[in-house]
Structures are given as structure tokens and as C-alpha cells.
Image 1 (cartoon, each protein chain N blue to C red):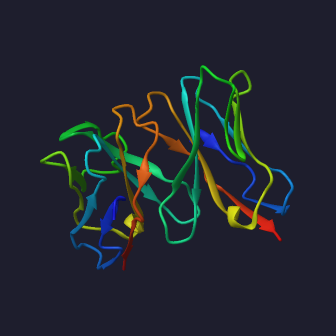
Image 2: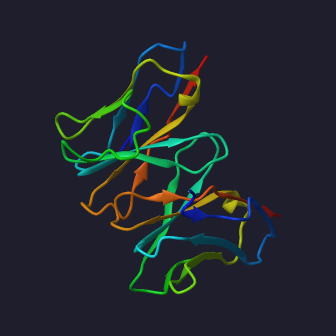
Length: 111
Length: 114
């Protein structure tokens, strides 16, 4: 049973516009959330994190929003750049160690 | 380099063969994690170590899978009597902190079982 879901397998966005990637989870015990970015033939690269005590974390062009009551988090990238084209995974954990990953969303930023 | 390295990058095994996959974490990282990623899926947790102690192996799919980290640095994931369903990318990650909030991943080993 998939505890972390990314329901959009792909997303296309024009360069300079905002990219919004969504993630839903089912386990209310999850307290740690991560976003990873993955290029082909490489391992995932850590992007940004948030814990359940916050509802927003910002790092440059990347902002993660957490809505605990809705069990939903989202990653906003603004402005989007062609180099952002990759597969994005969200991951959640109850203890900061065993993380459950979503199936990923492939983002294409069109120049 | 200073990142997590894994070897081999690619492994082809005949069904029934044993394989060993190696992970060299970032020096000084306390926690080490193994994941299995099937095609089109996200990484799935297999097991994790804190130093040499294997604290959680609940994700290992069967008793054919065994992981060790005897000296608290390099780790080996061993799969005995490989089956076709073991074909996947095996990812290793390490983390400096005991609570592995930021995990640094290696490039993975792509295992193909024929």
C-alpha cells in the first residue's frame, strides 16, 4: 500500500513560470518530509526538507508547503528554469530514518 | 570524490547466482541506508545502519537479502539465489546526523537478473 503518493506522473511548465509539484500521504505519524530531484543514471539529490512543526520552508527558488490536516505537501519552484527538468520525489518519515518515497513526477521546463 | 560511491554500477546475474553490492558512504557519516528502486517507482526502504548497528531491516523483501556494515563505514548488500524480481536499481544513502533528515545518495547499482 502506497503511503506517499504523487498523482501527477509528469508536468510541463514554461521557463520563468511557477512549477507546483504535489504529494499526498496517508500516515498521520509522518513528521519529516523531503523533496529529492533525480537526473537519469544518477542517484536522487536532496532539495529541501520540512518537519511537521512548520508549514513552510523556503530555500532560494524552492519552497515547500505542508498542510498536515490535509496530509498534503507541495513544492513550488519559481521561476522555473530548463535545468530544473528532472524527476522529483517526495518522501516522508515518522522518525527521520525510514523514509517512504512517492513514485515521482517528471518535470519538463520548456525554454 | 567526496560523495557516496557504489560498485559495481551495473551487474548482470543469472538466476540463482549470489551477488554483493558495495556502498562507500561519505566519510564520517553515521547513518547508512539501502533502498530498492524498481522501474517507474520511487525508492523503497530496505534497511539502515547507525554506525555498525543494523537498526531496522524491516524492508528487506526476503531472507535472501542480507546487509552488513562491520566497521561502521563501508556496507555490503548481499542477495543470495537471485530471482528475476530482484532486478532493480539498488541505492545507498548516508547521513551525517543520527536522525537522517538529509540523506546523500549514491548513483546506484543497476542489477539485472536473467
